[in-house]
Length: 143
Image 1 (cartoon, rainbow, N blue to C red):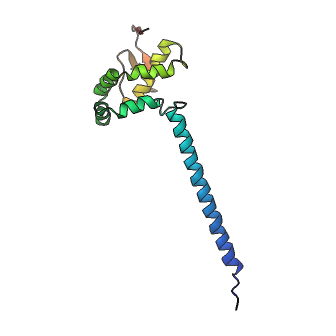
Image 2: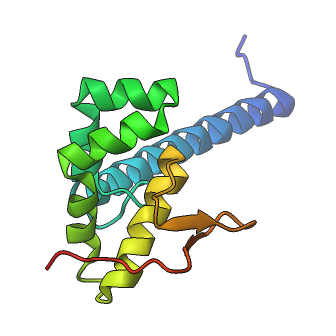
Image 3: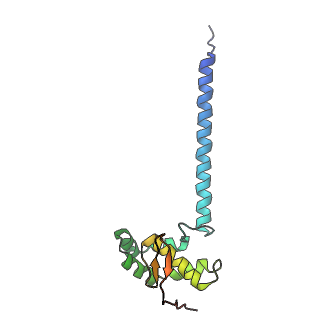
């Protein structure tokens, strides 16, 4: 006696195989996208929330900065990031893309505000969450 699978059983196996193949393809595609994005992030082609890789790594290696961040102490975090030269490192990254130093300063402060909640003393925040230079303030930029 020879067993011949019914067409119903064969169809079910075929559907399972197709589902498994799609699952593998989607998994490999996802891993590939994550790998490529990670490679682009590490090589600083892209940023994470506007923050370049080198800045994130510098932050992650500093216990004081991490503690202040996770405690929500924006003043202490700002002071520590200032000591670490984070603002200048970010300006260095963005300077080739944003040549106007005032616009660059505001852009960096906007990113830092969005990530840390700290508002620099030269800025106010409008109702849309955008930093606006206070009236009467002139930015003194180091050259």
